[in-house]
Image 1: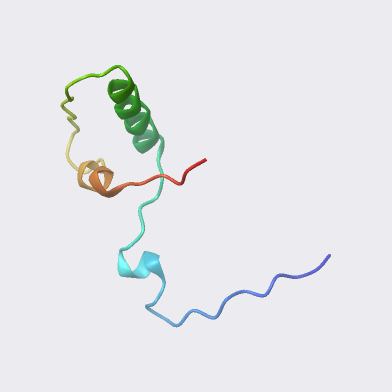
Image 2: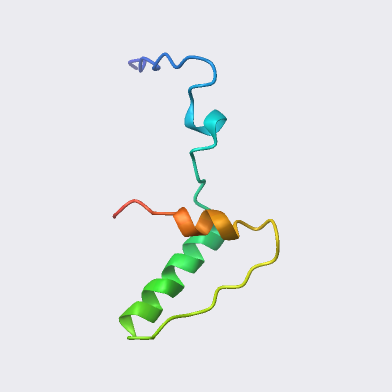
Length: 67
């Protein structure tokens, strides 16, 4: 088995340490599926409500990888 060389990342430079990373969660995935459903159905828009501290602001910037 060959070993993969890990990149050398200096302390404090990792995206998680800089706060530049959004973890994909089940709730973000559900929201994206609902948004796509509304767009495909030709809906004029939708209201998204979420309790505090559940990633409401992070969901605005979330862009899943294209599959």
